[in-house]
Image (tube, rainbow, N blue to C red; front, side, top):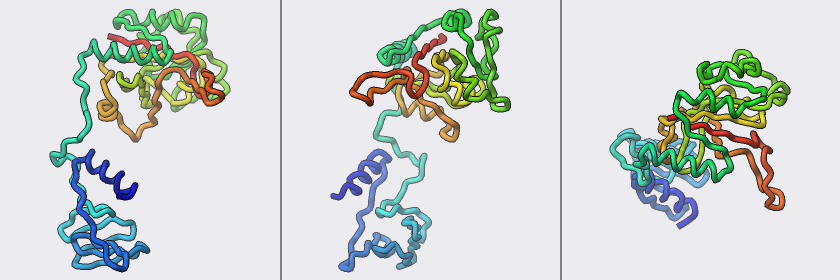
Length: 262
């Protein structure tokens, strides 16, 4: 089995599809079970009524799409059960505990607060700092004492990178958090803002509503729109590329404060 065949076999196993074996003619041309011949040069050939496109996708007379390897693709949602976990089965308490453990392992600072304590928790993290917040951040999240030091960013009136670099911190909400990997995802929604504001300032205060925490990655992607500008955050920015010495703040904020709201 070639490396390509091995990879395709794993894909089919995960999707629950069954590849159909391809025959090989003496001249080296692959012949699919439906009788369509594909030449080694990739020329379009029809045989027995099966159409083979130059891009390698084949369509049988019945309209079923066949991959270049000869496997018929089962339509999504046709009762195929993935061969991987799609839910974690964890309780809310277990999700919070696991996420806190992972984030602290990444050297993030984590606090779990009630909704009525959120404004004070954010104020404590931003004491004496000038900060940026997206225009869609809920107003009641910010303590009145922070008003003078807040700068607002929006898609309509974006701050220049130079101005963002002058600020000490940023406050955003989040879209989804995956407890198993300790990953927080921002999707550019109004309460999270543009990607730049979460990457340029040196300190990120990120609010995680408890209802946005999921156990595993498939659960997280099920909640995300992958056409949006997604930012995945797993702890403060850090690298050990040079002589295995950890250096923080290279690709983003060196300090990450996560406030989980229950």
